[in-house]
Image (tube, rainbow, N blue to C red; front, top):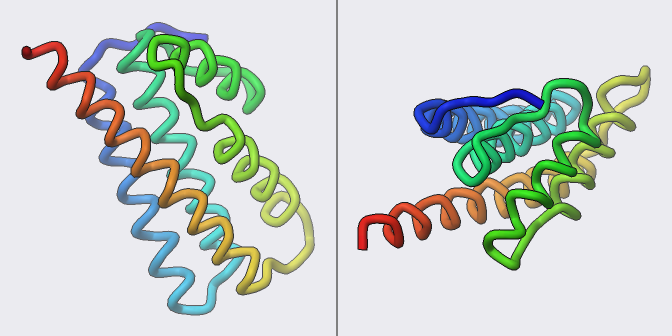
Length: 134
């Protein structure tokens, strides 16, 4: 784990949205393995934004650390999405780290999970910002 300032939250959320757009474009172009990979990247970046925003920490070693930090940051909300994050990380491991193909269905599922996760993270960060300003 590593400490990061609040400023990196904005950059990481922007990265998440860029990776998500790349996942969509790769899906449309029939590049399903790249779409799965970009969908997972979007969730990783969104999770980093989430954990930085709520606990000022990001994972540095592996994906299990990222899920652990997600759960820790979520304690403040009494709401979390570790299943979406974990599912995307598993899909990435199964479909992009190995010499296998990713199907259109694989990519569609990864894209749906990534869209839901990035949207949820964005919403929670915005809600917390509004709460802090009130």
